[in-house]
Image (cartoon, helix red, strand yellow):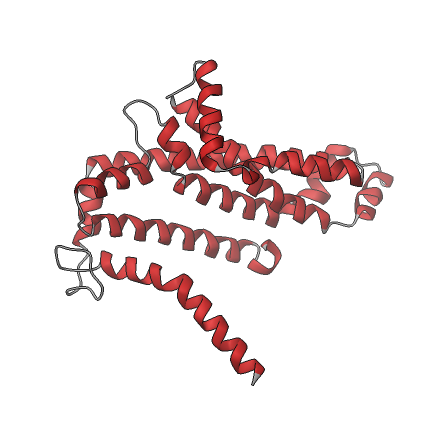
Length: 258
């Protein structure tokens, strides 16, 4: 009885999480002129219209550029920060971990306003560089926590054994730690990509003059129109996230990554 009840509760939770995605995908495939579920026939014309739109193409390219750069910079910085965290005592490590995850603890709007004033003071307000810095700041805690979790699963005796065999610090990291924490780095990179690609509030306040990320372009589009082109763009975002998860499963396996 309890097993059946648990299965029913899980089914309701999964349905609550997945039905909105199913509705968006269905709306993007409609042959009609309005977003509706169930769709009026099936067609890919809204995807073609999305890709044919110069505004959406430029926004998509900018979002991809910022997200990919965010992944590279964030994973490198988060790995260095995680190694520093590992070297600290337990008390200092707890304080250090809170400091590294502060962007998660503060409301995103307050962080965005703070970054806006700070970057304006540096002359980087409303520039692509300023936007990139902001995305790295917000995405960093996700990668940091994933890599810290991976490092905590590594037995310190393996590092000691490597050092006893004559390996230096960099050699131990390259040959021992890096292969073991690679799943955490990939997971952190995936989180950083998704967070950056979908970031709205930060991008709204810090977007470069004349540039729009995809979430901002969709917001502007839905302000004046409501056809399924927006659903097609959302569907492509869902597909990108699924591809990322499948890539991690292919490379390291989800059980090791999460």
